[in-house]
Amino acid sequence: MNTTAVNLIEGYQENSWLIRRHADSLSDAEALLQPAFEAITFNWVLGHIVEHRNLALVALDKTSLWPAAVDRLYAAEPGGLTGAERRRSVLQLLDDLEAAEQRLIAALEAASGDWLTEAVMTHFGVEKPRGVYVAGLLWHETYHVGQLGLLRSLALAQRKRQP
Image 1 (cartoon, rainbow, N blue to C red):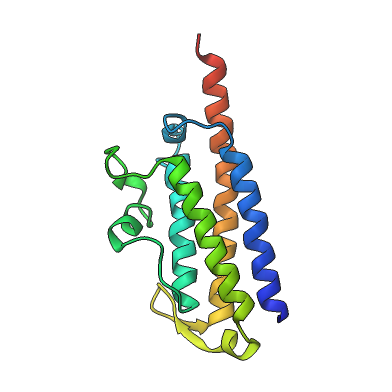
Image 2: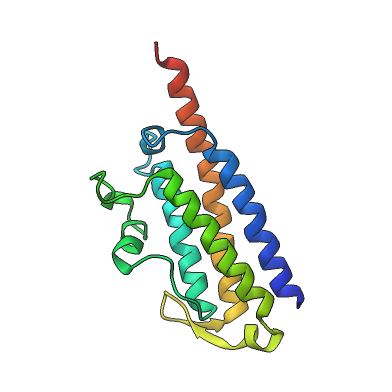
């Protein structure tokens, strides 16, 4: 297996480990708490990470886990999660995260170095080498993993305030 694929696999595995730690014991209600300064929730950030893993799967010529309607809920604007019938539970999102990780690992293990350097169209409409694009998506994911840590802290602080 080539170095790019190994590094990407390790990055996705490390992020998944952190995400599961951040999600540990959080209820769906806690995952919907919003900080006063930003309109994001744990649920949205976790779904956004899965949505970006779906982009990576497509870049690696694999099928997205979700239909486009679910992807749109967790895309760039977090405002689409107002109704419980529309959003996924934390457990569903963690299952989807795991499924996406397994598909990504399988695709990357089978990838040749030449294939990873082939140009693909990004979701921004710009061509990039496949491996570079997936690495950028992984970087974006890592940024959001940090947000999950802060949102978990918010939920735990709320628990302490409950009588």
